[in-house]
Amino acid sequence: MLSTRLLYIIAVVAAGTVGSLLVMQLWGARSLVWTTPATASLQTKLGWNTLSGRPPVLVGHRGEKAFMPEHSRASYWQAALEGADYIEPDLALTRDGHLVVNHNEWLGENTNVADIPSLSHLRTNKTWLDNGRSISVTNEWFIKDMTLAQIKQLRIRQDPEFAWRPQHFNDMFSVLTFEEYLQLVRNLTIDVGRPFGVIPELKSPKFYNDGRSYSRYFEDRAILTLSHYEWANVSVEVNRSAHADLKLQPLRALPGGVTLGPAAWQSFDLDTAEYLSAHTSNVPVVALVETLPWAFTPGGLDKLAKFAAIVSPWKDFFVAGAENVLRSINVTWDSEEIESLGGFIPPYKFAAEAHSRNLSISPYTFYDSHQPMAYLCQKDASLGAFCPTDKQAEFFYFFSLGVDYMFVENIVEARLLQEKYANRVGD
Image 1 (cartoon, rainbow, N blue to C red):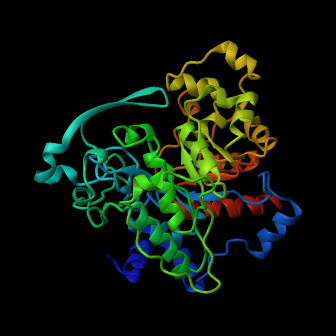
Image 2 (tube, one colour):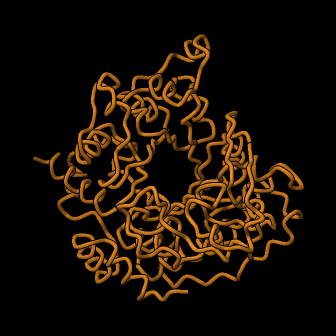
Image 3 (cartoon, helix red, strand yellow):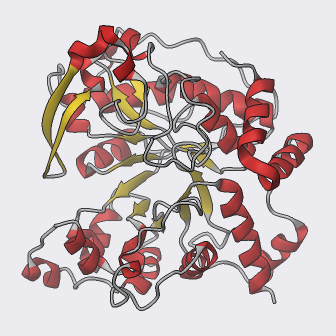
């Protein structure tokens, strides 16, 4: 395991000049308190359009993947040192029942699995349903086919599609378990001197539950793990007997005066989201709704408000609007159903409609400046009354809408834009 000092040095090197100065300043201060007297005054006098009246919460998307291999120990460390409010893991389930952290259900794109001859026999094709949509992936190594011991042989790499990201740290870090992630965030809370939120996403629950002893195996495994590490209270009992083999490490006691940050669940599978909400009442649920047309109607928001605390659409729903985005990803809808639910909400009104139902909004993903922003209007100007031309225009537009959370990459850049907007509002 890399030492705390080495991980700090890695984070400084990766962040570049501006980021390094900010990281060193924060490290020296030991406490990452982002509200300066000036911004606190602005917040008090002018407020933000968020549900809480506070600046948007910044979620480190897969840690800090703009600089580090995603979901690696160093990615999470850098996200903390750059001042993320939440640090995001994606959860998957191995053949032998271990929760591990990885975005895709497969491993070929972001690890060295293809270089390990002893694992070549596990390369295969799979097709499954995800929220009613058929997903087919060929010539890949799937987490659900592999044991934890096999996965621990792998090392994480930057996705080669994004050549501008630093490649210096490829093959340095192993795939983490969910338990190792939670241990890491607890330790960061102590070492950095501030709490960090945890926001696990359960990836493809039906895919991982297929072949298990019961249909909520994946969800209950995650609930029991999060509960053990003191982020979740089990409000409705789960099937503990099916998880007698779940051996979690003894807790490291938190020093006096140290408290954990908040927690939230995420899922695109709304059956899973409702289940998590019902069984861990102190952990709010993020409903990921990119492929659900009804979710972008007044009646749809009413339905979501019954179990979710946060609604999370792809960011272009706030620019191009629901109809244009859904068409672009080949999602169809029943016009009569949509009309009966109140029709599609205009993109500039969606946040306010959600807030009126006590729902927070969390668009994703706000990329590093080196990466295209990926709005439809950048290819067809007619798809959006407003089309961001640069990172500042993009962020200022979403700040003005009152979004409550933002999944971001390059957290330093996002935080600086947040501060710049706060000062602009006061001019």
